[in-house]
Length: 219
Image (cartoon, rainbow, N blue to C red; front, side, top):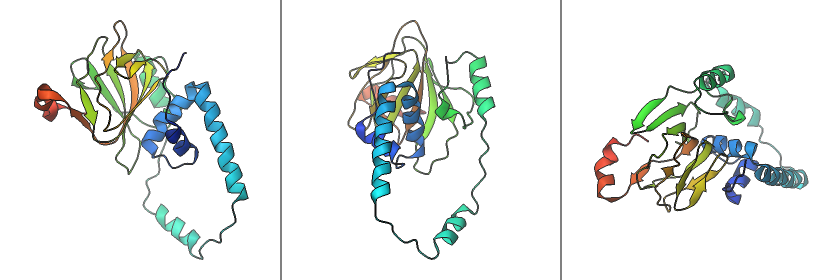
């Protein structure tokens, strides 16, 4: 697998120091699984963080620290992983060649139609930041609407490929976009494209046609 597009240094650093929100964490971690270069960079960042933590001056905890931590656990719903359900239901229908291990503990909904040639499958990732995680499946040759974003969007290609002004994205490539990016992905001919997406905010369609379609967009 030849990977050309990687997460930014900032995104990897946020993952390494535990400050990346859960939705985007799933997608970036899935990329690191398949990318030897990013896995190496990630290990270096973790090692540096470990040294800094080791050398930091100790700080005394507040007297009520334990009680406060325990109180925050009250009312938290117990999460039961559904690893077998996730793997079997997806592989049996031939939807993709593999599922990243980063998805192993999360349940998924059914595929739903969201536009011509495009289907979405929500991944049940609990996250208070508003980031939504889902699988996106597009038929060969599908031309997505020209759009920008109201927040951030991370798109990891699992199978197939697509292109836009930023380049060509195949399996393992990560497309990182925000409200400064305006693009129109086009799926390669000959193969269905399946991506893992973490999105904060929503799409903002461009042009007259986009404004007419905006009320019907379900992403």
